[in-house]
Amino acid sequence: MKIRRLLATAVAAAVTAPAVLLSVTPAFADTKPAAQTQDKPSVAELEKAAAAAKKVYDNAVAAEKAAYAAVEEAMSDTTPLAVAWAAARTAAAEAAAAKDTADQAVVDAKAMVENLPETATEEERDAAAAAVTEAEATAATAAETSTAADAKAKEAGKAHDDYRVAAARALSLARDATKEALAAKTAADEALAKAKEEEAEGGEDGEDCVPEAKLTTVVTGLPSTVVAGTKVDFKLRVTNGTGTTMDEVYPFVYVHATDKSGLKDTEDLLRLQWSSASSPKWHTVDNEHYIDAVSPLKAGAHADIKLRLTIDASAPAGHGVTFVAGDYFNEDGSCGGSPDLQEYDFKIAAAGSKPGTVDDAKPGKTQPKTPGHTAQGNASATPVGTSTGTLAATGTSATSQLALASGAAMAIGAGAVFVVRRRKADAGA
Image 1 (cartoon, rainbow, N blue to C red):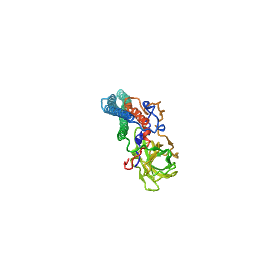
Image 2 (tube, helix red, strand yellow):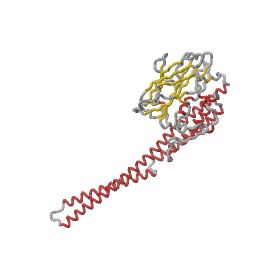
Image 3 (cartoon, helix red, strand yellow):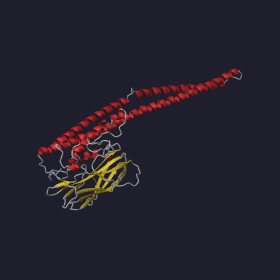
Image 4 (tube, rainbow, N blue to C red):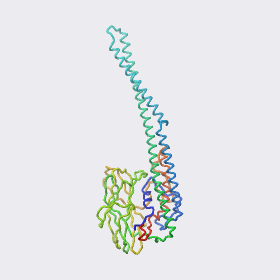
């Protein structure tokens, strides 16, 4: 009987990707923010969001295809850099052979001096000595030429390798962007399908639950920096600040992470567990991100949930965020929940790092966390880390589009994401 937070995890994932969710698209700039409305998005609005998400996904697929073609081209032996490298290797080999020949000439000239007969004339001895001097000069020049040729070959090889690495990296970024775009498209399609289903049913499943700001969720003890390969224990306090008992309260906890670029999702390298006074054994938070119900939670009372976050040692340095909220159901059919997700940002340091003493993560509002984030209605979408050159640009073209679609989803869907909906007890939502 848990309340379904429509698109919650999809939007949360987008919120934590600094290089992906860069702005709110101006097309939805006039939409009221979540704090100012409790209305669900209309089917028409969700159709618009789904169409935008599909366009972003199609663009991402096209960008990935172009990036793949660029990799194939980079790996061929006919690119200018490949041809230049081959020529440089050939020149280096020829210079090395010339050096070997010159060195042998020195050896031969010295051997002739040593093998001069005792009857050799002064002129013959002078000529042999001159031959040695000339051979040594030629060998020195050959050595310099060979060294220079080797350096040019090494430089050409590095340029060739860098070119291939850049192509491969651009493809990796394009694939990550496609993955993110597909996730956003899937979430938008599911939200639209659900809205159409509810519209067809005429809302008979139950009335809207009410937002309850006095049902609060607060995290304490979560460090602002967590080192990969370690585990940290912290606490979630759920408080019923109303004047009536809540029969069942479901804490909602979701942890998401990306690498520093924000393009690579590293959530699969995180594990979140919970423990409570009534259930002291450590349990893994379920895939809907809910913890077992607190039953009941009396007026003015609170319940503490122990949380344990484990980050795999292979996790790269990056960004993390913990989202918390609470939903409640009463036996009389009334229900509600936190109107917003409370977020706690933290950094992920690479395994072996020693960040020293760090403060606890501070609560913040659910909004894009990017250095270049601008207020709604004054949006910009410049991908972070964009490099000059065709290959680097290939990997980021879809990212800007994804930023706009994610922003649109936030703009038209935030009110629905965090407003709960009542379900009948036998609906099993």
